[in-house]
Image 1: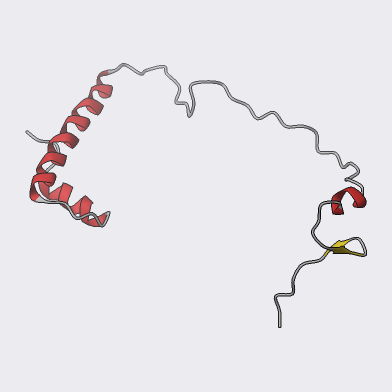
Image 2 (image 1 turned 90 degrees about the vertical axis):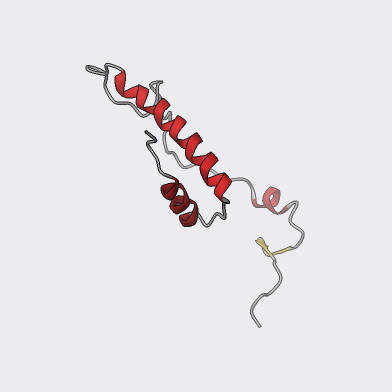
Length: 96
């Protein structure tokens, strides 16, 4: 017996705003049934004593200490600016 019905595939396609033909609905129903069958094999595994994980590797964020430091000299910052005045970037006015 199929674990998914053609009507369910059509409904999911409609929710996803996909236009599918009758042939495509039948094909997708068969493909999804095979996927579900394969996924159900995982239920046969004995997972007692296995802790749930979000990743197979023990990953930790390595962060540096948050320290303030001197920025670049204003001359270096403005060196490549197309237009600047009195130590500030000049940009075109957008408010009329």
